Length: 210
Length: 130
Image 1: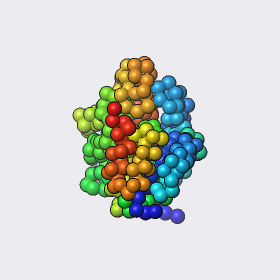
Image 2: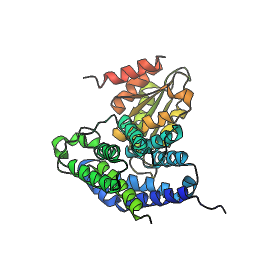
Image 3: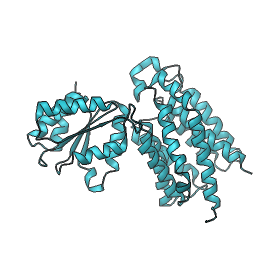
Image 4: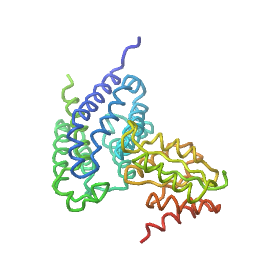
């Protein structure tokens, strides 16, 4: 039996926390999606992240870039809704950035930015359309502006929460919610909510580290 | 059979996908290969990248494959599926911006005449031009 590397251990802890938080919030994601979408976001995300948890040992045993690509591919193959390719593309692009020349944690903002760019391209979407990008793009801006600050984690958490709340008054112009027109106003976006859950899980885990 | 563009139907519902494929076969005949898929990985309503990849490969023709989809996730998942095909097949698949039933019938009709993938896609997409 081989000894787990520190990186492997960290990655497992992070992915496990993120997956468990998504799974725990599935009813909430579904309720939000029933309000303004097709009501499957929680079920889909739960299925995807359960699949990731089921393979976590094999995923984390790989080099970091391959591990992220595996997470992405697993989500693409198991989520079932549009969020599969969207989150899947995020993680695959993160893996690609790490395969090229980027390093963690040094290039965190660049690596995260590659993921956000992939989501935008996959969804042909921009911020302001009431999607997960309305959380991811502000968080990217915080990572770029506040890199190296001792309170970066707290800032990311706050940015994600504030950005999520700001999706409520938006009118959806992308995805299923766009069919509702003005009726999409007043609910936070389910995809923005799941992005916030993932980011908060990562922040909590990083802060809890001894 | 392989000298016409293949047609793939991707719906959230396997019943809709199958029904659409049945209509295409009845209205256009069997000279066009039609494959379909629907449902999420648990068999509920939704779409599934690996089933879409399988359907594209079943409908494969050297002239390419036109994919007809219903709602948002079907399109996103179909585009993802195209990117996960063998590299030499990726450029020969077109996801059409067209209503699924009418688009599939029009696309298959055009394909049956031996048209190129571009023509098949264009005919299907005329339906959503206005």
